[in-house]
Length: 352
Image 1 (spheres, one colour):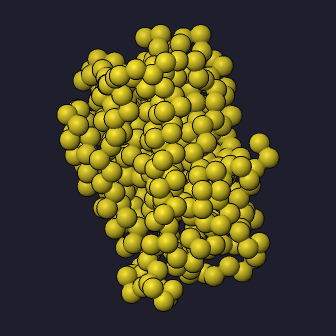
Image 2 (tube, rainbow, N blue to C red):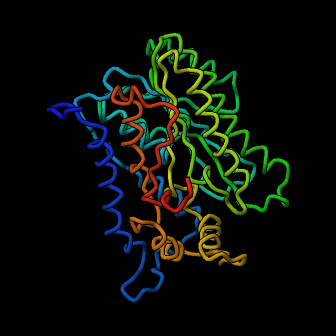
């Protein structure tokens, strides 16, 4: 494939994302550490307040990778109110797509140890999308509800005329030993992450099949490739999403609909920007059953960064977006059934 003005190769597109990840290495020492190495006063605030502040500060403007790489496309993105979903929505808009942003905008689990998404978060995503001159349709609802999803698919087609891209991103997580889990602590995570992803494909997929073209991108996780202590429900859901993706790719290929999985490493979103996740992370790295219960962000970052090839403790949501744009574009017409890892190199630690 030759590069020319107004176009871009897969290698160059993904290199842009790599530059963003690599650039984080230079700033990883700025995670709230004072010159004396002590915890700064700004880190004294609660984890939930910190996570909410993180969301409010997520103002990634988006980046175009070619001349209208997704021009004329309509993308439906679940979990679009913040984090990875927001970053993908904004980058797809920067590359010419109109966006349907779907989010529950409330608690997913009865007990959540991270900040809950709000309608204001979803509206902020819309404002960032609209800065690129693209349309944004906000939809509040639950991916566990098939009636809602099918109704949304009808409304999207009525408003936009077609659906080209589906990104199944909505997810949740909790931390508890498997044998100590209440029933809801297992089933609610599986229902939201795995069943919700399947529901999204079942609700929107027929619209792509009918047109004889389309792109489906599901969000799995590095934890879908290895076990995770005290996060069995999350890890199982993400393993399941990879199997779901590969099965769907086999079934939908005859209709020229591609299905691929984006595999994030640890990403700095409210889902992981909290003391429970940091504690579990330190326990995994240090192989201890007694990690600090209330670690700081700095402690977690210092423990993790040395184990990642690019020496970053975690990625930013916008580091995932270039790969999503590529998978949604015509450049990826021959890519299906694939896992695209964006982990800062963390996947090099795994056997497969």
